[in-house]
Image 1 (cartoon, rainbow, N blue to C red):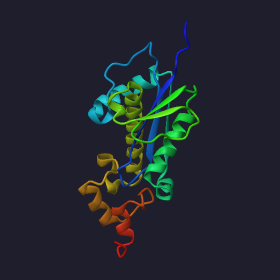
Image 2: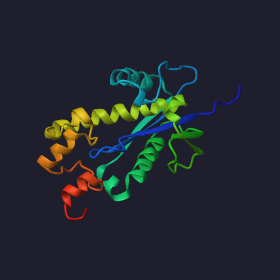
Image 3: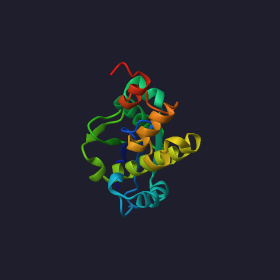
Image 4: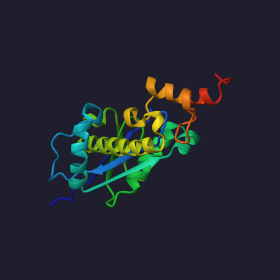
Length: 194
């Protein structure tokens, strides 16, 4: 029997928000135990994602979720911070994959052969699974941040720049979990540097 090639799918969640970390997940699916219903997390409802996430964790050969924190995002920029979170997720897997398939245009440096696939989260099951884990884990984290900073409404918008969030920022100022390098936050901190 030929050796099985272990393919790891990688995707991120939370590049666009003004607050909270960016998350990335790496998933090696078990070809002998497929998961019906996998799709790009953005095309699934919250209920569908919440139903699939534990199934992925149970059936995958290996999975990991990692983050780049707000300070790292501000220091590096969001693209480099995203690649850092992806690298951390891949390196945290308990099984090393033979190949890494990443949603998007760029691959993290992992020392493992990697390929970036545009719209990979809707083409490759392992990337779909990674997109679901990255999204559900980050959403859960934003609910925890909502407990600490209730007046920003993180439970509803997960840190994305909605009108409600922007109004709360103007009213309450910038918290320690806001990304100070992102324009709407930066303009509040440094109003004369527009």
